[in-house]
Amino acid sequence: MTIWQFYRNTTVGQCLDDSLDEMIQNQQITPLAKQQVLTHFDKAMSTTLSQRGKNKVTFKGCIKMYRYCDNVWTFIMTNTEFRDTNDGFHADIVKIVACDGTKPPGTARIFGRRVVVK
Image 1 (cartoon, rainbow, N blue to C red):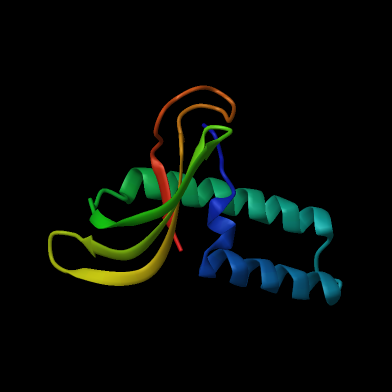
Image 2: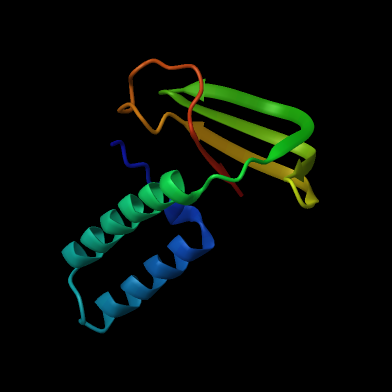
């Protein structure tokens, strides 16, 4: 399984990183231990979302920029409406990063499974 580090940029990932940095400053853990914890976090997030994340969301908006590089799609969208089965919400600006979660980086596939909305 390919492990991407996108989830480190989420609120939970950033809080974990900040906490680990503080623990390093207080000499409670080593930088190597921090890397091991973050690697475990990446694997846990990827596994949990692929096994339990079954909700489908549709979205509609204006694509201002898109890019495909190294098997990763990046979209910048404005005035985007997100909807699921129960409700929806609006976002003025959205960055969507999509990559193939089943193949290693560098292998060809048009569109992927992992989507992170910031």
